[in-house]
Image 1: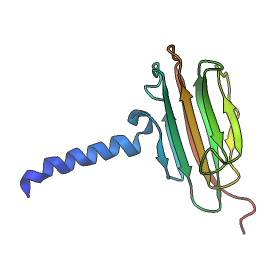
Image 2: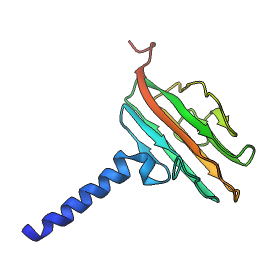
Image 3: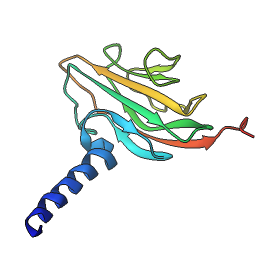
Image 4: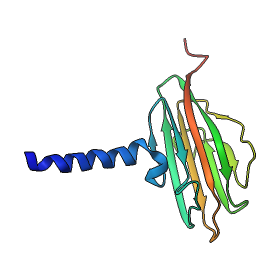
Length: 143
């Protein structure tokens, strides 16, 4: 039993890096905390490479909505996109499609407790990327 303790610590450390620090984990994931962030593009604030796609699924408690707030946004215009959907997949309604450098991105709010984000980048020159946080709020229509 004593020999398995370091492996348990390694497993806990790996879980911490993958699930609790989304900016460190690289590319996408499932986010289920009522509030979270910062969530970042791969290697933020450094260049993030090319020819990849990252997907995030944000799920907050039922009866709540999601509010995304961006601290930074810089993508290669017309080649790299962050698409934000009002539901659990890319087949849901598109809330916003972002590209290029944005001085300020207005908060983006879902109509339900689920939001799907897809970041695609496929050019040889990459930009800084993005950094956002999210919060949940009880729907005003919830009784």
